[in-house]
Image 1 (tube, rainbow, N blue to C red):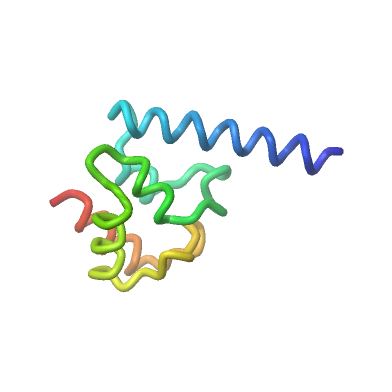
Image 2: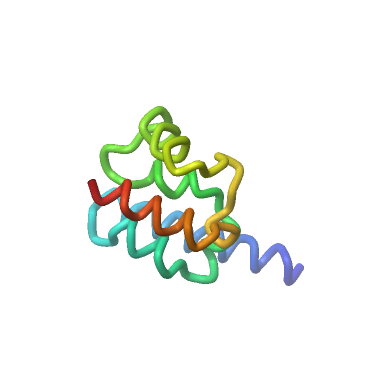
Length: 91
């Protein structure tokens, strides 16, 4: 029961973060640079697609250019991948 409660809490926090990203009140680069605990296990493609003006195709292009697998999690990014994604998203 405790695991289910934690999973539901993480899901609600992620939904809230995605809504803030859509509104523009949180920058995608800030989330990638210093991700909160509840985003560590989220797939990077899902986080990027929550940002304004980023759909599946544009997110895939950015990730391909930065050599990041779509199945990679935010917490699993290397420093190089993190740095390259931030630079690409700031363009």
